[in-house]
Length: 309
Image 1 (cartoon, rainbow, N blue to C red):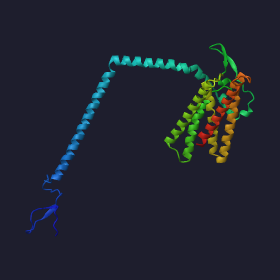
Image 2 (image 1 turned 60 degrees about the vertical axis):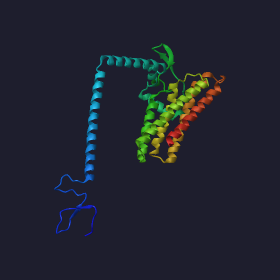
Image 3 (image 1 turned 180 degrees about the vertical axis):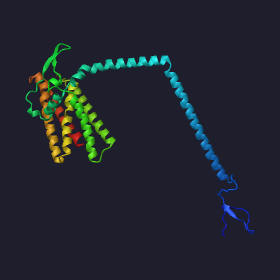
Image 4 (image 1 turned 30 degrees about the vertical axis):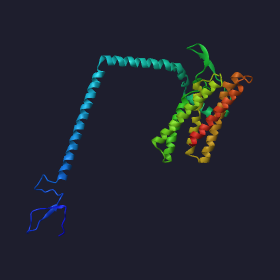
């Protein structure tokens, strides 16, 4: 039998020494004298003790923090300071928000009904059938002055209900289309919604800044621009729906028709409010015309980009 240097001798048998494995644990010796095994067991026991100590310190620290937090919140001076801070913040937000957007003005753009929504969708998709593009006027009972009628009483009035609903529907339809193509992910849907929202905010801000730089004075306000820029989502929704039943050539034709309809609608609406307001002899006639054409071009390009992308 070959000699194994990693074995230690045991009781001799027949005059010859017997060898057992160096790392074997002898049942008769519960505490082996192997120094490597003893060092490993001591290291393991030390690690367990440290873990238990850290866990106990963490519980003690958490309990201390919770007790201090409860004592801080139970202090009457703290509650008084928090109430004062909330009241100051609420008053500040309310006063500064009223500078830009008033509740009555916001209600005006959402004063719609079912009949108006149906007529407005038909006007945006088939503007060639419309003959009267003028805005209707009425008396405001709160100020007793002449002003534009709300959208529910005038189909030519801009609103924000259809743009908001169209934007949400567009995002949901894109998600459904991605699911049909087995490409749906939450990240991709979030990127689609954020990209469309960023483009929407950017175009409205760019148009408002352009009107200020070009010194274009007209009845159109920032919320009107938000409404006109949001109507493009109606044609985009129709295009995405057509993708489920038509081939790429058919859906492209639908998109082209929706862009032509949107262009016709915007030219008719904005020309009445911006160009005809000053007349053909006004020195800003060309600037207003170029501004309208730039708005129409931006809406068409964004419609193609957001739909095809």
